[in-house]
Length: 229
Image (tube, rainbow, N blue to C red; front, side, top):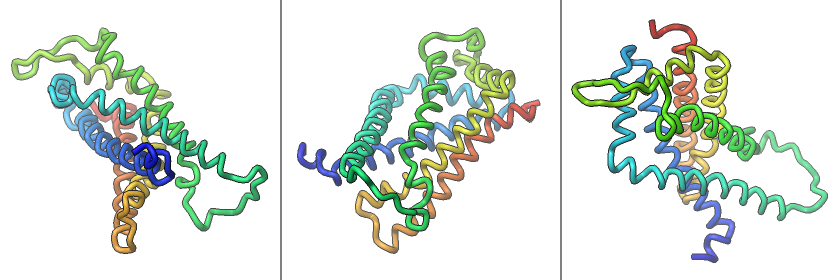
């Protein structure tokens, strides 16, 4: 196993598995967040957020999810370092624009920018909901169940700060670009790279990336444009 992990294919295999794990999480996370724009009362989103915070299975998955993020991030920098070491000292740069996409050539940069977005997101919402609390998180009662008003926290943040909304729109777009290459390349690394499936994974990956980018971008826009009224 140690030899497999230190080999190039082993490192890429771990990267692909952790990436696909995060792809599933992003889909679930986006689904919950889109409840923000489907119910102006906030009840749907509050119920979704409450379920995610209290469900025993989700609680078990949280540390696994955190580990998945750490593995994916650390492994990406490690792979880039290994690739850099393998290059000649004086490397003659070639025009690779015709051989690969911009996203594929800049995955580390995109990943780094997405990491910044993730850190800001955790500070703005996750830490407040999970640990420190916030005056906007006053308790509400929905269908007889007590829960935090997560809707008020998120909606107020986007309504009061155009800069934050623009930041989240850019973050969603960057995440979509990152996924446009990462999605199908993960399946390629796992061996599903024949002509029949690779074309389909690329198409599915592009559609998924667009849905993620648009989905995350439309949420702050919804509040910034006053569509909640």
